[in-house]
Image (cartoon, rainbow, N blue to C red; front, side, top):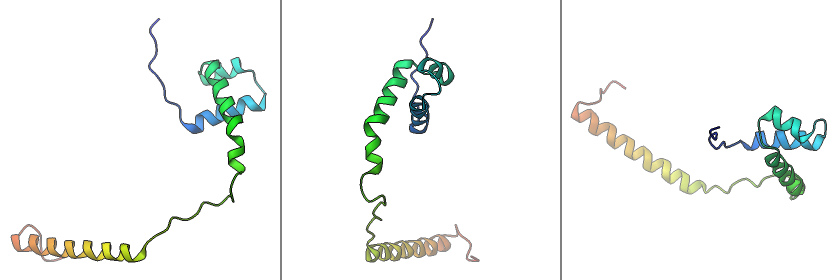
Length: 101
């Protein structure tokens, strides 16, 4: 029997399977058949979920907004505007861009 290629499961899928185990409605072997994942893998995901569950409630609950330097952004906008204007005039002079914009 040939081995099937390695599969990479998304975090959403892993959490779905791990939560199903924690709920306890079905056994690990039943979930293994349902989700087509080895029982040992399901047990590992369950352990990871239980070990890291407390991290969800750490901190203030709100992510700090990233610090934005407005002056730098305005300078970059000005620089890009100059470049666009230069390229537009150069392409128009070369006849590669129509002047009717």
